[in-house]
Image 1: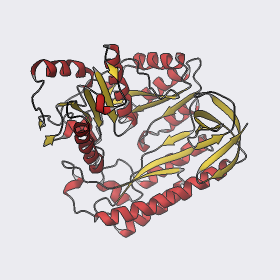
Image 2: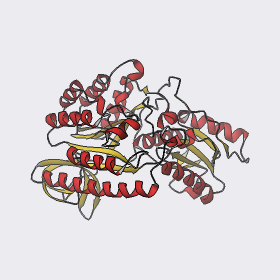
Image 3: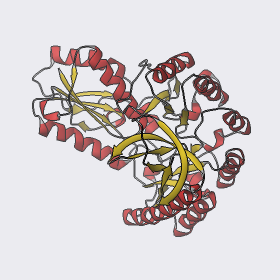
Image 4: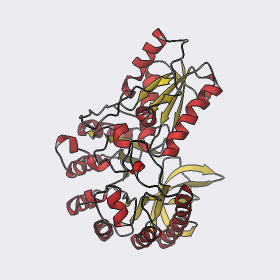
Length: 431
């Protein structure tokens, strides 16, 4: 059969789409880039925000409009937490991706030709049970330059705004040997950069009674693989950045000096309402320790604007904090209600104010990005070649700044040189 894939959301979703794509290919099916000719359209949905949830529903309906004969499959977080009508023939959710072929076989045997668009019968997972990690084995990204590797699933934190623990369940960690085996294979296939990711990466090993040093153990083994040139980390939690962990990171030969340290707000009162596990003082201590060990590192983060209870004063606290932290980039999200979360029951900030604050913070992020890029001028760096147009390559530096370079080479190569200029948060490298 011909199968079409559409992925929404995070890197983990993309990794899982790549894994499911491989399942279909290994079982004799054909992947198509044209939804209109597909026998099966699989939408890997996202539910991290209300907007992502709405877009997921829109894409499911779009697939049916493009090709009324196709079987529409809703996979992923939005499908998992849906409590009402889901516009799909088959609902897989987050916990049955590894069984998708079996589920579709059953569908075609028993239900072909019937309308299975229905009310979701999923119960929210993970609140009171332990989950197992579903290992897809080796997953190759069709991107061909940087390889994403998932090592953990689920989250136990239950931040008051977040639906993901309900969608993904409790923390479940991948076996270390399996991770290392995949990393070795990826390097043997020519990938020079591996990005280690998870739903809550810093919880790796927590389900086994281990602490953050379990993640360091895994990273150390990956870092020692011959042929690897870059090791990059996904999103990290501030309170997991212990001195011992950071010092351990400093011992990794190939670690990229880029850390995405989740913030969400620069106001202590809002952080408490969000059920985050730190305050701004504790966060800043981690930033200062990272900078003392990784001078020149880039620090990126996420911030939510217009969270319930956020006043003009508390928003100004956030602005002051992000300037002091000197982020290289801020991913800004206007707060979005998620049904079933604690925050959705609180008094809401008007949507217009949420968006106005987001716009202001994005402007500040652009200002900070430009400042960081200017500071890179005159310093040695390297870039992973990803896209070429008219002899000019684009890619990312080790500290994850978009870079232009006029140099010979092939996609996936890493070239070194000196940063000679910057503009609008981007840099140019000369070799």
